[in-house]
Image (cartoon, rainbow, N blue to C red; front, side, top):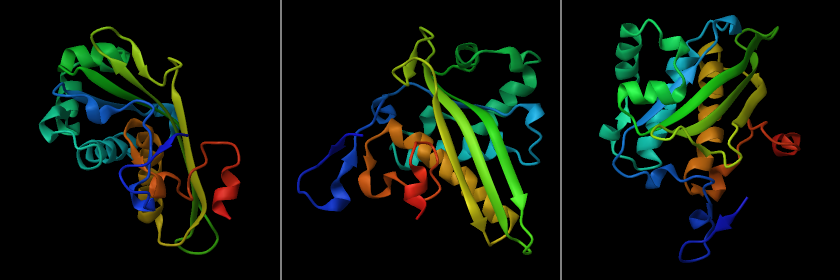
Amino acid sequence: MVISRLGTESSHERKVEAQYDLSEHGEGKILVLVRQPYLLGADVNLRYHLSERLNKILVKKMKLPAENIISYDQLSEFRSKRSDFLSLSAREAGQAIGSQLVLYVMVEKYELAELPEPDFYSGSFETSARVVEVSSGKVLWPATGGHKTTKVGFDLETSGVEAAVSRLIAANAHCMSRYLYDSPAKTFKIADDRSNLGWEEWTQ
């Protein structure tokens, strides 16, 4: 993890350097494509909620023009017209919809368990992601050419099922996207992050 300092050394200005900087993408269109396998059995539309959260991060945190982000509504309309949508690769989907880059996300695991106390829940959410250049099909991130795994979770949420789902979505979107722009060091790590070895130490 590389931390850079901008100007003074005040903690609020320290940044964790991006592994791949989407904020420098320029004028081309970007598509967030989230796949949610039917066999996952989740009773929540993770595809919609995660896509919307990531699209907002692209605009608000990475400062990309909203008109350069292909919205979930645009993607839904495209999907409804393509009977072969599920068989399309990230590159093929990007080509067909007119994007230059695709942030491709696969939902790997999702669990939400109701605890004995009313409105108390535990949960976990795992995804794998990569950034694909549509013109070449090259994986731009991660640098290994594979995918980046993001794992988040918590042992206790006391505000009900909607709060629990929202917490998992927000945590996963944050822990995934933080590598795609120079992220503020003070908010880089969060308590629900379970992506790396030793994550338990951050929850103490």
